[in-house]
Image 1 (cartoon, one colour):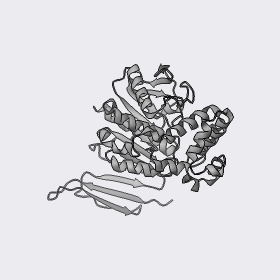
Image 2 (cartoon, one colour; image 1 turned 120 degrees about the vertical axis):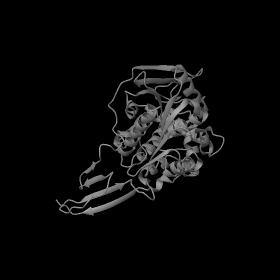
Image 3 (cartoon, rainbow, N blue to C red; image 1 turned 60 degrees about the vertical axis):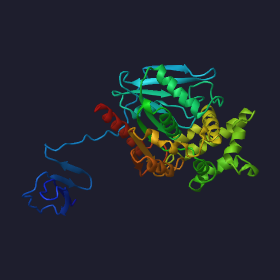
Image 4 (tube, one colour; image 1 turned 120 degrees about the horizontal axis):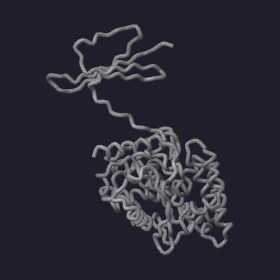
Length: 384
């Protein structure tokens, strides 16, 4: 195999301009070059299968961020918190009981948490708090829409923080979780030490229309048709409203049929490459009913926000908080237009676009950037 080498010369010595100059040379394996008079040199030798970097010991090296999911772990405590006369929410803690608190906000709404959610965080540094939002997961009553609004959930997050005696915490949310993370942080910026967002969803009408009224169908026509065909042609002017009618029917089987179709549509489009395990979640009636009913309830009510651009309009309240935005380039559920609009409104936040990913946090490129984002905020916290 023939080898090619790239040499980077970096000189910080300039008497007149005080500027740095980067000079790149590529040359055959047997050639040599004189380096007389240069200092602060960085040599990089590359082959097609590896990259080697050599630096003088005096140069400051930045530690590369971990991008690997942490090992599975079990919670050290769990419980239920009564947040209203009707609702009790399930919560759990794992990782380091004395570590920096981070709260995980799941998607949907209605999706609930899963054990794999704990793996995005270093368990030696973080005190990891997961909870199921009203009506979702293990929270009770199951699939309930009563007293279930964005503002109720924000109050629940605060009640949980106070219950666990946490003065402030890091906030992590993806998909609908990114919506809730933004809304919570804008409501309580003094309680938030850092924010990690994934698969941005700002709950604007154009985002709902894209996914539920035929936009994403252009990319997934095979997945769209079963979702479409559950609704008679004379009701297809608004699928969200048509499904709302069925998801709130007096007939439980009608609810389940609509819930399965709604959930399966989202699960079939959540990954860049089809994921059978995710798709099968649409066959679980208990999961699907909570997922579909609560999602649809929030979308019919436009997230209970006062304006279509509420979250973008209130970005100034959180611009001072360290944040990372992670977005899959080919996200069909929450297309990149929303992440891009958030990035333009909030350029202070790190913006990571994963070139070979869709929507799911479990896609390799997405999960790697989420772990790295938590590592970055961990390192920032350690230096304070």
